[in-house]
Image (tube, rainbow, N blue to C red):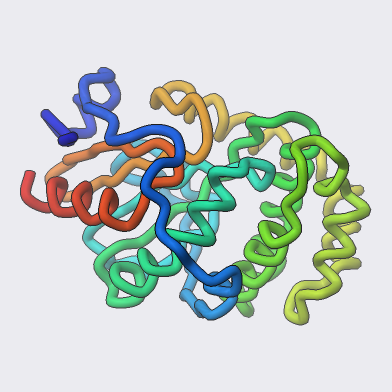
Length: 241
């Protein structure tokens, strides 16, 4: 399937063909693959050429990468966990590490209250580490996905998220607890704003991805836990658009 008529304008108008849905064609990966990675992260307070406010969002890869991938995710989403375990490690090694792609991580609490708690915690952790040890965010992010249980079973409660955080050396669980107590309402508003923007862009579930070239404004979307081959096809088509 192709990414026909790829452009930011076409995407916003709903005319870009989505490549795949659901969770077909999975690749086999070690459960520890995500922990073998050491991706770089950076932050930005700008609004991207795609129209996404980058403030408060972890961005994996080089700021100079010519291709952007926007990744809407929910820590409770089983297809997100599968993507992170089976596809993301190779995507990072083959594209992010060499500087060809950067990935903007956007928390979208699709599955309810615990998803919102995890999304807020994610923002707290990113704010805590982004200036001093931004790569620590990845350790926390991977640790939370490692603990994924049944949706809304309580595995992503505040108490449990704090417990997982204590296993991540470079993240201060006490600081996270304080952030969740003092700033939850403010950060929930930020998450809801991100969710509203996702709806405007036609994002209706997780994981959803948009591959975007800021120079040409070519854009195309993928939905579901797609294998590396689908991302390779999407990146190539966007680069050639």
